[in-house]
Image 1 (cartoon, rainbow, N blue to C red):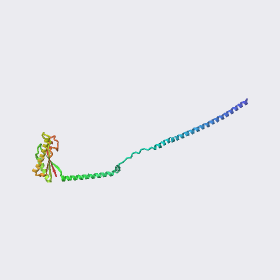
Image 2: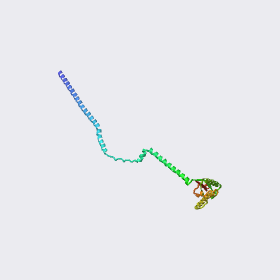
Image 3: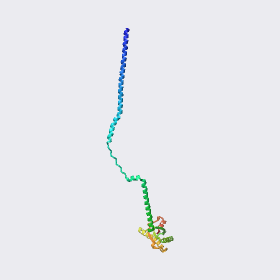
Image 4: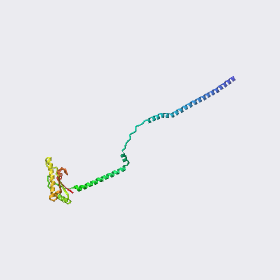
Length: 247
């Protein structure tokens, strides 16, 4: 009985030992199998990473080919712009051109000024110069020289004789006359202005012995008024004779 019990125990122990060995072998086999799949997964991951690194190159290849294709296209050249050589020369040398212009302008001004002076000299010698030296006023409708006018004529005659000058007498009239037609109005004013000029000339000749060939008379009627005739003073101021010395 005891022997049978020992045999049974021994059998159980052997069974347990064998079972442990088989389990360990199975665990070992599973570990080995588990390592192999892990190695395959790692290899796959590395391959995937390599493919990811290689993907940009693969993607860039079509883009590069496209760029190469578009580079074959040709664009129309832009039109060239033409510049004036004169403008370029002026922009390059502005400082030199300005003094030349100033010098030329100054020369022209000097020439014009000299010609103007020469013209004045010729006028003063050939054509003479006229100076208005006196004005003699008259009453309305009158051509008689008053005492103030006689004193002025005396002084002018003396100066003209000393300088061998000629005398010019211009008679004027006011616009105011009696109511009459326009044509008659102009004729009356012209006649009165002429009478005033002749009256003054007669004083120069008869009273102060001034040579008649050096006298010039002119009548301008009411064409050259000095003042507006809104007031009587303006009217009287326009009824005048102007005396000029020419020498």
